Amino acid sequence: MKVYIYSLQSALKNIWLDKWINLLTVLSISIGLSIFCTFILININLESALQRWSKNFGIVVYLETDITKEREEALKNEFGQDPDITEIKYISKDQAISEVRHILGENALVLDILDENPLPSSFELKLKSELLEPKLVTQKTSLIKQISGIKDVQYGEQWLSSLNNISRAMQTASLFFGCAIFIAVTFMTYSTIKIFFNRRMDDIETLKLLGAPRTYIRLPFLIEGIFIGTFGGIVSAFSLFTIYSFTTLKIVEFIPSIALIITSLPYMVYILIPFSGACMSLIGSFIAVGRIKY
Image (cartoon, rainbow, N blue to C red; front, side):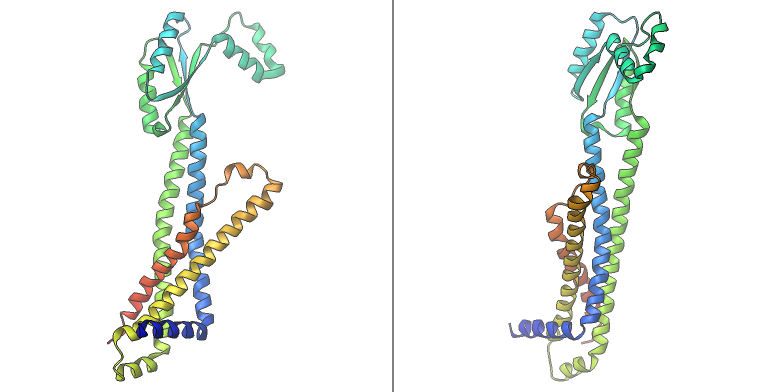
């Protein structure tokens, strides 16, 4: 117990004596963790946007112009029994032309020159959110096209593919930055502890001559590393929470729609940030003190 008390007291004393170096390292670590958490936040918001968009995503099934009412009803029942389809909306030819007139507004007069309604009846189908992968949706639409009485199937193929590509790119970038930040934080702590080690070489040699155990010499450096990483994480978490709060409380007054698209980090993440910083710095400190020959 005396060893731990001495190590804690020694670490706190050295932290204060080398406060400017420690402050610089803490700020550097907080910037690195903030960058990584920003990518996580972008990922969360992108996933949230995809989920909101997936609720409205659907495919449009256009029917043959000469299809009978009985066949339309049979198709509706067939779609209703499909476990991959969550919602079915039937749009008749009259409803379709009415929607076109509404969209055209004053220009709807051009439709009066038509002898008959050229628009087909259709079904708007919504799929399970688990199926909203470009490959799966393409497979599903291909199967639906083969059904008798169906003329064509359309959906936002390019839009869906683009969103999924963006999501995967952000996940890859987050993984890359996560590894880079881990290495950077570890190296910064290693360098800082190595500087402290060199500056205290005379004290370390004295302790060795007095027969001090290995833990007695190394533990203060490990505690300093944990302190640096923890406070770097605290500064990062506080900064991110402050920026998010400012955005939702102030900027939303000028851009109200931003409240609908921005999502905060889960509160557990704000707790994990200091813990992650402490773990990274502990690894860097452990590597540094491992170079102490004893």
